[in-house]
Amino acid sequence: MAMKEPMSKLPNTMSALLRLAVSDAQKCEADPSYVLEMAVWHQPTKRDGAAVCGVCLAGSVMAQSFGCSPKERAYLEEFGEEDSAKLDAVDDMRMGCFDNAVDNLGLTVSKDQRVAIDSAEALLDEAFGEDCSFTRLAPWSVYLKVADILERAGL
Image 1 (spheres, helix red, strand yellow):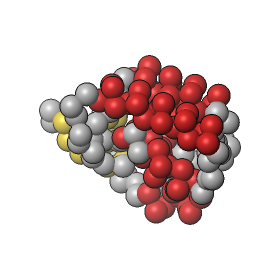
Image 2: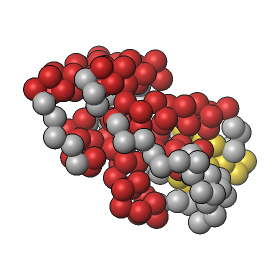
Image 3: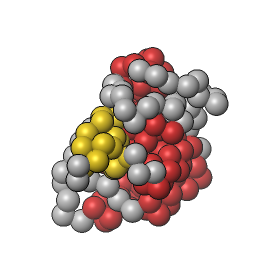
């Protein structure tokens, strides 16, 4: 996999990770080489006869922050233990699985932080409605509100 070195390590907080992922996904949306596809990490494919790279929210970080080529498949395990755990946490947060994200990041949460996580989960549940699929994606504005909630709780 051809990668450029990231400008800096991935953020350590859930809120900063989520904001970075949204920003990177928006960059992928604007780039005709990419298509958002929540069922893959970072996988070249064809769409309407054109070569594109499907990326999930975490895959957007692989593409933009790590500089993975849209012509090459990237796997979570290729990013080292710490960054793989952070990328996995991004995927967990995308689906509203904050307990999994907390576990992936090795965090211990206080009672106040638990309340914030519950609030974030409720916000995403409302945005998802009846969609229970693992490929669900909420509007960017919802993820940014979730990031605000998590940041206020020190997450």
